[in-house]
Length: 452
Image (cartoon, rainbow, N blue to C red; front, side, top):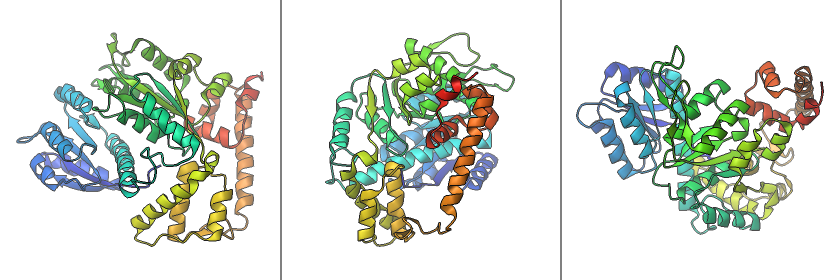
C-alpha cells in the first residue's frame, strides 16, 4: 500500500573490487548507490533523514559491520541493515538479525540474491516511512495509526488489534488485495511483547515453489550439489520475534504440510538436515482468499488452517466502510501533492460522485492511486478512467482478453483432470498469479475437481 518509493543504498565494503561489483549490480537494478570503503565513512554519511537502506560487510578493519549496525540503530532504529558475511561469521550475522538487522547474505552469493534482498528491504523501508508519515501529517485524523477511518468496522478492527497484540498466539489475517494486511501485521508486531526484535517477512506468492521450502526452513550444507554452505530459514531467523507469512494461500501444498508440522512442534528441520532445531516465533499469516473455501477446493492443507485460525482478523473492504473514503482520499491527496510538488486537486462534483459510487475493488491501494492521478491531472470524469487510456475499443479488448484467458485456464484445468498443481505447471504461472486470475475471472475450481 505504500506510496513512498525509497531507492537509495549505502554500500560499505573495504575490498575495492567487491565494492565495485556489488555497486554495479545494484545500479543496474535501478537503485541509487553510494559506496564507502570503511564503516567510519559510511556512518559519517548517514543521518536520521536518510530514507534508504544499508548493505555492509561484516568483517572490516577498524569499525566492523556489527558496530556500524549498532550505531545506525541508535540514530534510526527502523533503517534496514543487510550484513554480508563469510562462512565463519554466519553465527554472528544470525545473531545480528535477531537483534534487528534486516537480513544477511553469506558469501559467495549471486548478484540476483543481492538485488532481491535489497528490493525487499526497500519495500520494508517504504512501509515504515509511510506509517511514520501518516502519524506526522495527520496525528489528529483518527486514532489507530495506519488504519485510518472512523467507521464502526475499522474502529472495531483497531480495537481488536490492541486487545490481541500481546496475546502470544498465531494469527490469520484475511482481506482482499489492497486492504492493508501488511499494515495490520506490522501493528500486531509493534504492539506485541516481541517488538524489540524486527519482524521477519516472507511473501509466499513472490518466491518460486522450488525455493520457498529453503526460504522458510533453511538448507543444510551438502543438501544438494550446489549447497556449499548452510543457510538459516525465515522460521529460525524469526526466533523470539514475529514471522509474517504474506500470501500464505499461494504456498504449495507440500510446503503447507511441512509448515504445519513445524508449527505443531515448534521445531524446524532444514533441507538435508538430520536433526531439527527449536524456534520460538509468533506466526502472523495473511491471505487474500477465504482459506475455508480453499480447503473445500483441496488447495489448502486443512490442519494448517486449523493451526492458524485460532484467532482470525478480517479486514473489511473499502466498499463496506464508505464513510472512511473522504478522510482517506484527503490524506492521500495531501501526500501525493507534497510528493510531486503540486497543489492538491480540487474536490469537484465529478470526483465526489466517483468517490461515493465506485466500488473500489482495489481497496485502499486503488484509492491511493486515484488521488495520485488527480494530483497529476490524469483522471477524466467523462471517461471515469485514467486519461492515459482513451481508446474507444479498450473496454471491448479487455473483455475479449478476459474471455480468452478464462477459456484457456478452464481448458487447462479440464485437461489436468482438476489437478491444480498440474494446471499451474502447464500454464507456467506463479501460484499467486494463478489464484488471482481464478478469482478475477470467477472460475470455480471445485467444478473441475469433480470431473474425471
